[in-house]
Image: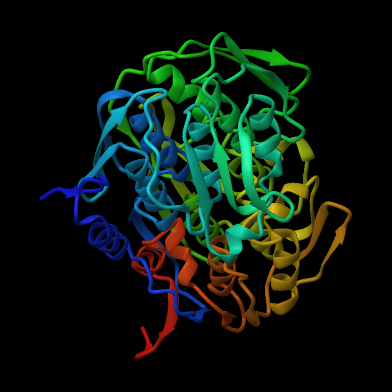
Length: 477
């Protein structure tokens, strides 16, 4: 049975609601939870598809001419909101089954004017990338989201788009959502040096550049995730990537290509895999395997750091799938983790993993210093402050020095709470993991937002043996 997400269909709202429910979505009510001392974690699991690749799969399917088939798509709320936006802009988007989707694209420059504002919920990646997509079309579109997304800065995306000729018709204070963009009839290609290492800025500029004549050039001094470059090549665009400086890259895109539809197999998300990995490293006796995890070198900063701390993480059955490096991860508890210093240049490859690294650092011996975390201040919450508050709530000594976080590991955690999650899925999951080996249960105030990125987190962790209880209107489950 297919579930159409075309604006021509009459079942869009019901389809998206059903897809969200199937994926473990929520109705918006806060759901406190508690994680307690767990037995050794055992088993083989697969985490959901990579969030970054899932967003881009839908977007590139929309920009190709013809049908793109996607397997392994992450069906979390953020990605589903991107799917709705693609449909509202003229693509036909259908859910064929669990993780199986098809997109009938309209081609570069072929988007249609949406009838209503594009609501991205909590999806920072989806909203920012789609701003680049809209920029390459002579249409007007309004972008909006939930309270958390409305607080996140968008000026860093708007600045290069305005240089290309995009008009910001309206925006909330500070260039925040809700905002309205009007794409020009003739987009101007630019050479743009990103002020920070951000795959979202890079992707927005390159996606806009698809609709401009000539070459659009993006320069970054620190290399960020390269999923957009890989997917541009996968769909037939002309892209060259050159080294720039010590750690950076220069990406050049030839505009106005005709993108060809290509099948996409979305690998398992390393950012989601980080949570069962962490749990296995801190719960004594644990030995687990996580299948099909992306090990793209620009996404494995956490695994590199953990190995430096003494973690037992083995890559098994290494292979290439859909243009991405993939491996099965075997993770074993050794009880011999030590604190390390994490260099600032590693941040782009593990920016979403610092909250869970802070938890692991609490169970290590010695100080772990994480340098250059300014980007954590502009995530779903001020993650740097949220992590620090969470560590305090569970009795872990720490301090913030500028944009650096220092965690004083004692090898054990007392636990407690409640931890304020600030509507941030990664804060919620990180501190639930913290409770699995703590002397006292760890409580978090809301796990509802976990559905944005990892809707199967709770059942997957319980399948491995984790002790987690969620308070719902009907009691604990």
